[in-house]
Image (cartoon, rainbow, N blue to C red; front, side, top):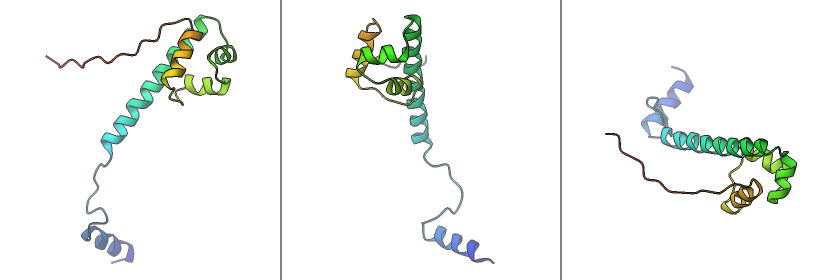
Length: 108
C-alpha cells in the first residue's frame, strides 16, 4: 500500500478523517444560500425603486447618507443593511418601510 492510503485509513480509524464521504454542512450552506437570495431580492427592490424615480446611485446614496460604492454593493446583494439604513433608504426613495414577521403556513 502507499503511505497516503495508509495514513488516510489510520486517520479514519482514529476518528479524525473520512471512513466514507459524507455530505457535511448542508444545512449551513442552505441557510447561507437563503441569506444570499434575500440580499439579492432586497438589492433588486432598491434598484427598481431608484430607477423608477430616475435617480442615480450617487443621488440616492447622498440622500440616504451613504456612499455610492456602499449603495452599489447593497443593490448587487453584497451588503446587509441595518434597520436604520433601511429607514433612510425608504425615506430617500419616498417609500414606506415594511418589516414584518409573518407565520409560515403549513401545507394542507
